Length: 341
Ligand SMILES: *Cc1c(COP(=O)(O)O)cnc(C)c1O
Image 1 (tube, helix red, strand yellow):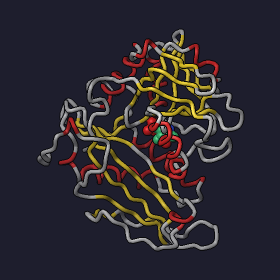
Image 2 (cartoon, helix red, strand yellow):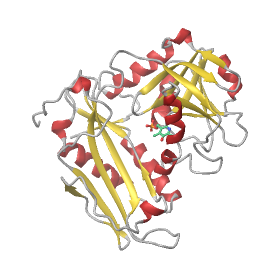
Image 3 (cartoon, helix red, strand yellow):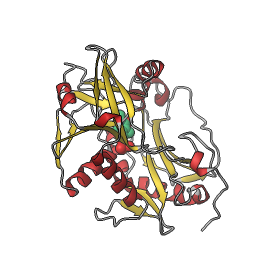
Image 4 (cartoon, protein in one colour):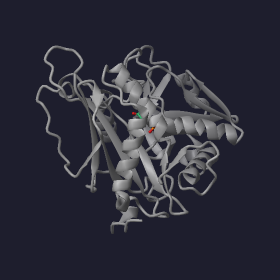
């Protein structure tokens, strides 16, 4: 095992920190090139690349953890590979085969082993695959060339002072994704379109926004760049919609919720149901679960408060269960972890 670098793991932020290597494969002349490891942090790109002009770009986010037994576990990388393929298909990009994706993820994590945070620090290694059209095109059509890069960066524990509930504001002035648009894929364009919303919410003192469906503003869509869930009467309830990104964390929480005896409902969820939940949360790779303390609706001037603004029992239980699997503290009964050889 490589000697770990000396970093203040517990205080790392969710930011970019240079590591030793990133890995790249090009799609050229109809085939993917053998993945190449490089220390170059820059990309030499054609100025007419479709990734720059026409948004032919998608990304992924996943994590590797150093477990209680010293082994390195990458969480559900196959699901990220499948989701990247679906994003690529929709944006008419070359589709990276799952085997190529998994091979690149494993190689880049291994090459940067000294940046995988030690067990017990709460930190992890964030893995960021990005795929874009690198070939030139002036007419609006797909590129002939694509580049898949995977880089990694160590990130600190999301919760430095315990499991902190967030304040959320409903945004009726902007939509993240159109009803039949790109909400179901991890396209960078969705993020560009959501920055105004999150910046405005921050300025008002809210770390996150709740989006309603773009068409009727009747159903709950997503909570910032995270899926939403509510708990009520022994049920885990989460919105299902074409404009909601299929979160791998949410998929896992639904399985664990069922394991723990909750009834799982994945269906359209009306905004009116906000008043009925005993707990609410946002979920995604970065935090696993961000408990929602309250949701403010500027239209009605009403604030929905959950569990007196404290993290609820089910949210805590689900969070700890998923964490324990990722760190190898509990058996991985669903076969989610890819253990690095
Ligand atoms: C990435 C993302 C999520 C979370 O997905 P995970 O696979 O759980 O990390 C949720 N919503 C949006 C819009 C996202 O882009």
